Image: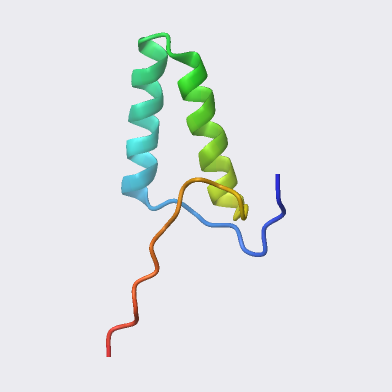
Length: 62
């Protein structure tokens, strides 16, 4: 896992969605999917260059 220059913090709504999605996957016994989601989120939070979750960068309003 790559080191981060600045860790990201998921917004409350995003965190709520992640918790609900993980609970749903685990209830369906889709443990591999839940694990993969956790790892992708960890990479995103830590700012890994090769993470699959991308946050779009919109231009600053003028």
